[in-house]
Image 1: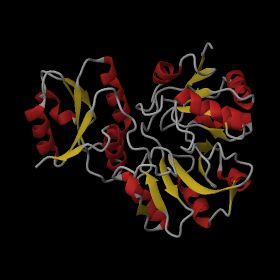
Image 2 (image 1 turned 45 degrees about the vertical axis):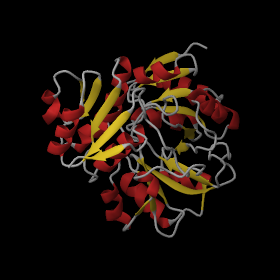
Image 3 (image 1 turned 135 degrees about the horizontal axis):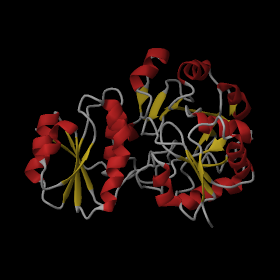
Image 4 (image 1 turned 30 degrees about the horizontal axis):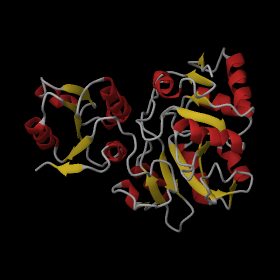
Length: 345
């Protein structure tokens, strides 16, 4: 299969390309599409065969549910049952944006799309190209991250090509992703909303709108063997480069010193910009300033992917504190490390 590249930096003036991609999706093809978070591997969410091809292309377990993407909250009542008022409040405040809500699924949504669950994950992406494609397709688009399962997610069309060339029909190049980590996932089917995955929408922002949110234990620790994930990204080891990763938590000066004392010439280092010059013999990927969580989110997957082009034998990564987007960045690093975390003292 030859993968076609569509270059659509903005939807206006590219109506024909948008329509062509939408038609491919309606017909059951797989297309890599840009969102503000990461690139998604898109398929018609209502077509079980197309969804099956997503799992095949990614090498993803079929019980790992997919997120369906819609262009507005108006679509919720078509695909979701018993939609709580909380969902509409969150949608009004944060959609389009990096927020996914878990809701009860209507029978129209195939169980293959939901990973066999009676719930469905739904979000409205804040990328003009993605929204234009979904509207033109007229169906919700299932779109997990467009990487090979377990690998770091894709934040550029080039990343998608690295993982999916020859496996899918097309890739839409909509530029670099502005957020850089996946959406925040919140479960609204329980009496108290539950955070299943931290992401591009900080937990603090959600709590300002709907009050207290419980944090699922899978956010901070590995799930139990055989545990059925209720949302994407809850797997034990995820987002991982080829070399093993060790995450170093704690005050930045101390974590930098910990890495410096253990790094060898074969070590790769992911660190805050302020400490990059401490590792002259190592390959270093800067994560952003220790005070700039948005930059860290934007850089984390690029940094993890970059080491696969090197011969490093191990990777040490500084971990941000869990406030704001730091919770999502730390979660991605810990997942990449299989929760191999040390505390610098």
